[in-house]
Structure formats: C-alpha cells, structure tokens
Length: 79
Image 1 (cartoon, rainbow, N blue to C red):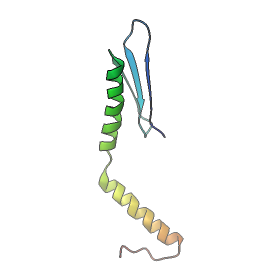
Image 2: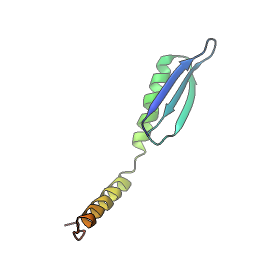
Image 3: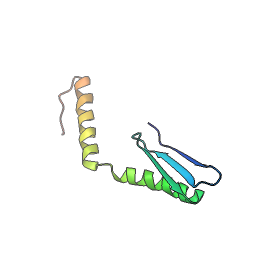
Image 4: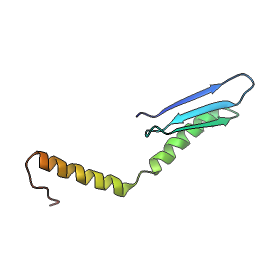
C-alpha cells in the first residue's frame, strides 16, 4: 500500500493532517499551520522507517533465497 497524506482546513477550524503509512495505518492530527502538518507527514513516515527490524528483513531475504534455490531445483546452501 502506498504512503499518502491529506492536509485540509475548514473555515474557523484547525488544519487537519491525515497520514497513511506504507502498512495502511492512518494517523489524523490537528495543527495551527499547514507547515506543521507537512512536518507531521515527514515525522510519521520517518518513524515508520525506523521501526523496520533489520533482523526480520535479513531473515526474510534468506528465506526468499532458499525458495529461489528450491524453485530452480538446487539444494539451498548458505555457501
């Protein structure tokens, strides 16, 4: 799912900042300026990037390599 955001304002109200991260999680916050909303978008996406577990990514990559070897009729090996 792609990242997305929406910044809007109704007369007499605060700016509304709705941010969707790449996992589909939606965060809605309210700010006094559009600039604060823009900073919030980057903040949400930055903390999402920092949540990625490098060990999990490595494990997934190794598992994908094993599956590729199996599909090609090779014995999986880490050599």
